[in-house]
Image (cartoon, rainbow, N blue to C red; front, top):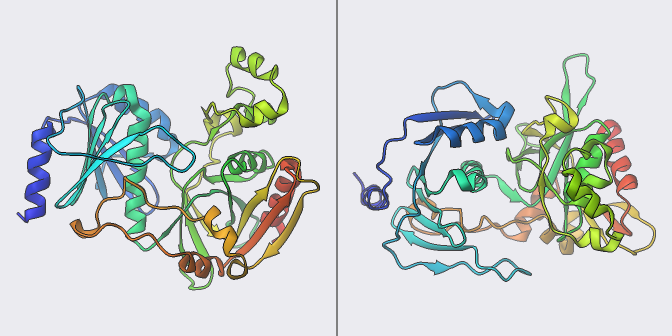
Length: 371
């Protein structure tokens, strides 16, 4: 056994990671199969309901995640506080890098995650924090795609199935924006016009197989929306409980826009079965660079190389849940020039001026259908 493997194994044992995990769930994410093992059948039942159509028959897996229900384990390491994201004040994670991987502790829940060198372990009150297990699984999928050479984008994405005598083919469109711009809201509006859903907040992008365009892979995470998004889209009527809905309807438009109170959108219930796909060609990227009260909405095609100011809206660092590469050096996040080079392979559309989701959604659907 290598030194890295020994260290990771010893640390996992100290944390209680050698407990039996007799229950299994398998996910088929296209080019990646993930197996989830646990000592909690109740947890896997929740995950089964969450991942829905991506649940697969038992079999071989590219990635194995083990989630062990129990008390929050004690950490035998000195931890470093991860600084809050820009605009935030609450410390959410502490971490320590070890030979072969990384350990992360969630400060509010006590959940502990150990990953790297082929080991992916979650320990603590998993069932009470199943959303963190979902995120951990998705982060392991993101790592899998990053190791294939993908760029990580902070974007939602939709697709449209084109009529084709030789068989259906997809056209795909990503949507990004600066903080609070409403990319998830726009994606829901385009879905209401018939589009398929690809991703809500993270997008993996790389050169297409034909060497010309781009391919995008979504993350199997349900959209999370604010109340204003649900109240202004008839397809999302059932997302907000009636008592909350009555309370939110009393707010004025500005307060409703600023309100942060997220709800999961179960797509099958809102839009019908079969509307969530994970892979599609990426023909274009819409950048929401608008603001409330900004006047008439303007939509224009731009070149990524000429608009470096727009790139940060799409760029996304891998974050604390990305392990050290090869057990030694940390991931090196791509430079803006790498994003600009990738986006030169697709259309880039800036939406500026005032906020008008209907106009933007109409444009997106027209683009998807007719190019």
